[in-house]
Image 1 (tube, rainbow, N blue to C red):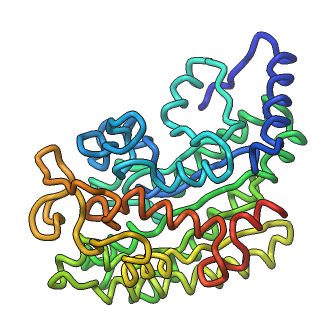
Image 2: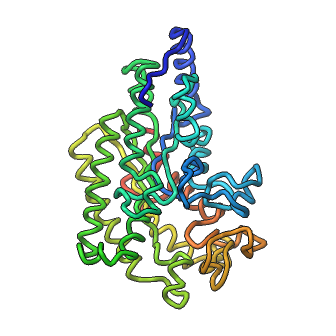
Image 3: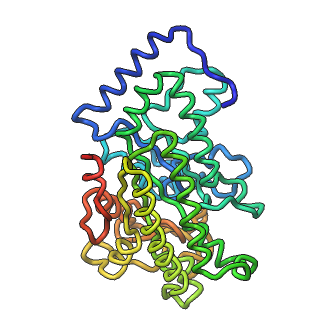
Length: 366
């Protein structure tokens, strides 16, 4: 993004941009744009452009229930939470940033005014240090990319128009699970800090990046807490098919810290609005009351190999369940589209049991 994009007809581009903004404000759309930051729960293909990343959903059976029926970088059988949030907002799914970045460098007329996704499978709040995860895009780098996008959009439409658009747009943040997984997989991290110290550092680090987004025009935030990650099939393997309570407790501790940080942060920036989503409570409800939502399998993955279909990831040679609608989990770590739809419904319309202080629909109305 080092080279600034120049256009032959700036007047025409500005006119088109105003048209886009006005269109986005119509009744068909509830927000001008959706900007997504996070991990594999909301990655729509950024990792496909990272040649050295091992976290890529590029093989069958991923995408088997997606409209194209093909793998597309989503860690899901069909649409993921990012797609479904976009549906709720009445906007197209925000495209992966890396799919557009090369076109920008080649001086193509690319606009980010309709939204973009920076989410990356394997990403965490902290910058990764190991050789595998370092090939993904951590949260800090995602915000770096957004700062470059903000500069380009300012050049395109001017600061006042851009700020008007961004103040009505949704900034969705779904990240943190990989940091907790990383803690449990690292004796070094465990020796350096207690679980409470670690999750406190996660929350404070997240706040720093949220403030950077605010400084670049973001005003409406949808922030997801961590789910009961100890109940994913990969972790149940560690505990004779039962949830790993230590991992769940760490998620719960982080969520409490995150809620406190968000309250504090809003006091420091009076013009922000946010909706916190209790992913933990939402997933636990699906697991504890599966038949109420049409599920019959809450422990095993739909696609995988071995016990609980979770000893190996979803591969072309994996066994795959015939009915993806009755499984909560698609692979050893990620939910099915069916589960994601219920979760996103609660993000959008959820009661105070799942959202704080407001839900996304109420956030949009501000």
